[in-house]
Image (cartoon, rainbow, N blue to C red):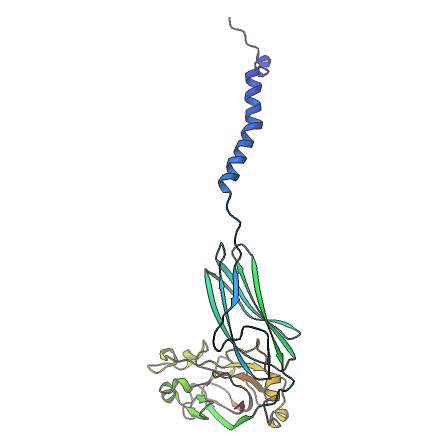
Length: 308
């Protein structure tokens, strides 16, 4: 009859060696193999720089109020793709002009900037990659002490009809001081800067490139079929009608302009409201609302003051 001695077998040299190997040496070997297989060169960060070339500003610059410059940015991935890009503006208060997600190896971006009346403003451009590594560059624009106020044009008592009131025309050319109906605007798309329509509850000034405008002007010559769609940006102001009437140059126009606040439409128009706007040509201006006849068959009357 065979005899077994379980406790002695567990204490045998072979068992002890096996236990030592399994609990000691094997994990060390596993960890060594795992990390040696996973080992890779250090991740490279993303890169961002200003584009150079004619017409582009790439260094800190002194400008007169209202002067225009163009800034170009190039960013590229390091080890992993870019996933975020931001444009920020600081003239005492930090604000964000653009905040965009993405998944790309590189990007080029250009921005037209109009110098505000702020003594100093800083433009910052930030990229981040999939590893959440950030890189940024800055450009400082300083207002010249010799800044002089520019001349303006005034266009009085412009009347535009809403989408169901085509008789006056719903489109306006700032350059030509011309009211156009849909058919005329279709044939003169590059000049159509403003468009008026009445939304679900509100009177709205927009432009052909605004997302909702095509739904109000349809058909073969409707905005959806245009090949040129100008974009005008609007912002509300605290300017009173009396202040507007006294404007003789672009000083108040520049003071009202907020680079990061412009929207693709000015909504809830009411008599006495004064809007700030930036035209497709980069001109700044103010619009004073005189009258609003509500509903889709209504109209709006306003006066424009815009930089020459």
